[in-house]
Image (cartoon, rainbow, N blue to C red):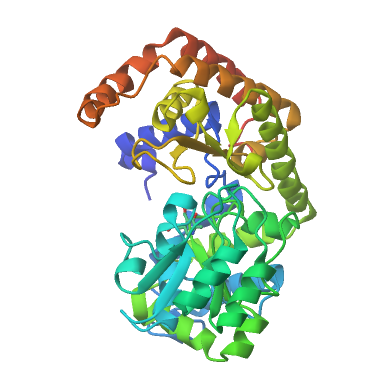
Length: 442
Ligand SMILES: Cc1ncc(COP(=O)(O)O)c(C=O)c1O
């Protein structure tokens, strides 16, 4: 068979360019990471060629003996690593995993989801009205307190009033430890299911630097490509507590995935998940998780010294949410300026946001990917300084007050920003640091 380089030089070249980009920038989007060579290798294998609708030993297609072993191995590794009696490793990604749980448990248009509002750090699939999860099911959203922390008194009051069928905890932009026990007390009082979406913190849980939800919740969902450092994919787990509440949960979830919302599993992805789970069960992974948090705390401490306003005042985990209003810079402008300087993160809304989603007031950044590269606390000191210098420089690009002027401003800024001398100087220094920590020879 011919190689990609020979068959499709255009795509090959683009992939090589992306490889170079990933090598030369500081990848600080907290939901991204660098999967290992072994994980990427498993993804690019002949397992891609197989159809295996169904589950091990119960397939709708022939020829699945080996795929059965792959999927069973992934299941066994996940069960052992997270301490759960059941797992489904087939969700194609995090969003279908969450949807499948609702399909398994809720009656369309009647069942009610209660999740953290997107504007406060929840995920689209936690029942936001624009997502299928909010369109096909009833949903109510809780918010954070003024201090940026979960307000359990308010959540309890709302749960008692709204009587949801499922409460979702586990978030996309929450920088603090999640108290799963408190959520469980509320869910148990209301008599509803409790689901923890640990997509962001799965790797931290495995490493023992964030408490596990397993003793407290009924269902756990997680993506496999964030702190867990695997391929894009997801898993749904049922805990002992979940089985006690409803022994049919495994059956319901399996059939919500197929025939409910998916067809065949991606067997190459399943194999890569198995590889990632093996990697995550090593002592080195524990060290990695600990270092993510150490790095993030150093970064947060340094940013505070520069007068940055961190939502909730700091961070306990792998991510930091900065409210830039006191700096006089819009989040979208800061994110673009930082990209021009080689620091890749994302613009983000902040609690009690006053701006629209495309021009939010904050930025979100984190340390999982740069920690994979081997960076430690001393690099975080440098990075915080660069972030501060870039934000200072970007103050000259003021987002127009008038909404109708913003699209034109944005179009011009996207060209202009990459010509900014100060930012391009910083990007050279960033690149010099980045390439000292090679990614693809890991
Ligand atoms: C908490 C949480 N759940 C689910 C998802 C969805 O994952 P995916 O993008 O793989 O569908 C994300 C992704 O950002 C997330 O942060």
